Amino acid sequence: MPSITIRIDNDTADKIDRLADAMDRSRAWIAGAALKRYLQDESRWLADIQAGMAELDRGEGIPHQDVMAEIRAKIDAHNAKSGR
Image 1: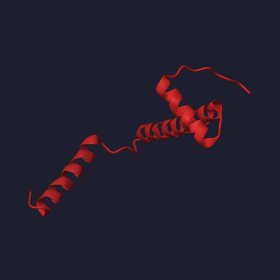
Image 2: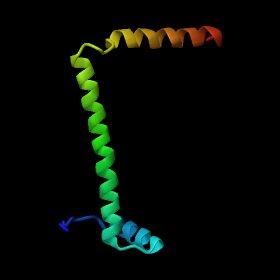
Image 3: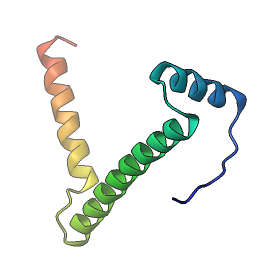
């Protein structure tokens, strides 16, 4: 199994140690689980960004000015109902 070495600040090391103790796990297990979760989250975020960019490339986006006009209309309607 490959291994890596990272440098972390004392506060992060303390948090890892406390979590490892509470879970009866090793530092390596905690770091590996955290890294795995980070990579899953970042990969999902990147895939969403890439999907959005592909939608825009296909002309499926909504122009910014149209979105802002709709938001302004909703705010104005809300303000009119609430007497503002």
